[in-house]
Image (cartoon, rainbow, N blue to C red; front, side, top):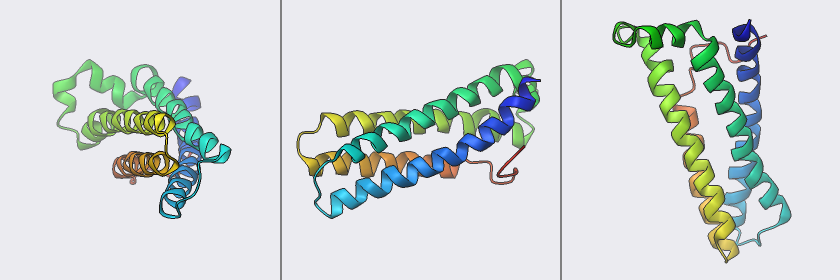
Length: 149
């Protein structure tokens, strides 16, 4: 039951992550390279990207520990599951890298908020949000359906 609810939700929220990421990274690079001031929009979008990523990771954690047959099997027999490439990717590589991407997004948010100069704010957001997005892209399970209902 949980799987039937949270897997489609995880699939849907990924697109919100993509939209927020494009907006955050795009605005940050635009502000940095265009030597723009830091605006309320930059602040809101810079908050929105890590926040939506938080939600996505929380849904992923619920799937990992309580709902996904793949990861529940992995947790029951870790050594045996390591012979299954899909279990290794989802259970280890995807999960750990997404947690790292989340941490990088939050670090980018924190550094951009604490920086004094607008250029430093935009640079921190551009580079760290960009790195976070790159980590997300690298570990998306592209072989799975991109939208589930």
